[in-house]
Image 1 (cartoon, rainbow, N blue to C red):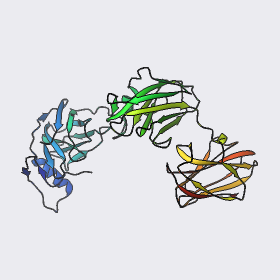
Image 2: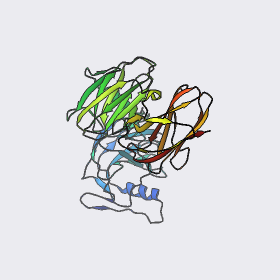
Image 3: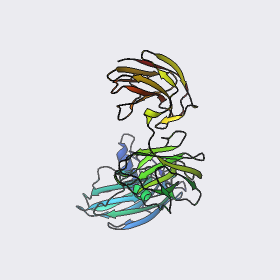
Image 4: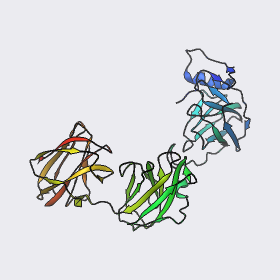
Length: 397
């Protein structure tokens, strides 16, 4: 919990005193200071909404975090919910007053980056409601809402996208389909979410058929969102396709429509991008660089020149022939990168994968071959751009 520091000042360098002894608790210090803070913004009425703004001329604490102080009249036995809502800063809310044993405090209780405090007046009197921020120097406009019954709040957390806002973005005729690749562009006039550019596309698909969506750009770090039937909130991805490109794989529960939102990780990003919709890569059919034999230990080198093969990771694909019922153990070890191992092939409904089962960031898979045939052993790494030697051992289980 962020507590108010032991000193509050005005931008004019005036000092507000009212300090407790150093032996007092931090909560008591905070309550004492806020009790003495001047009320300069006005009065709040339960059931009303008031607008305000934090600026460099406001009261501030020793860490240069600005504060607005409001007055609220409360009657014993009544209840109130106070919401501090701002699109300009990460809100923090304090309340002090009669009957409160400590300063009431909240950061993100109002959904998103908004603050909310709900409480019952134990005593009648005048309460101070303090609007502030999580970080020094943050300024901007805000709204304070007070109500006797708490209303709904956004479901997304602070720093997370608002799925309702993303789903409401206009597609303006932009459409996607399986097998298509489309070109998009962000400029200074593009719509934004938290100052990051966003552009929506409509996607029609076949229910039950798994697909992949990939956003690529050489101009910015891509970020991809997906909303639609059967998805709670939104799906999102940053670097799943490797090299700062994004990838989402999903199996649609209906034909849609789904909303695909192209975005960027950086505020104010501009440039071109592509969105491609296709079927997931079948790892069992990937081309190989060589063959493995049971009992073999092979030395190799995994580097940035290797292709992206799965989950946005670079890798090398090796063939391993085996018979149904055969039990094998495959180990991937490296002192240069965090090893990640995949196996795909006949009879495996989903690829097998492992990160650290061999210890020390090394990978191990032990399993029984469900069918006879050629399996794909994929040497990969947890890092996006691995570089270094490795050993791959295939032995009996």
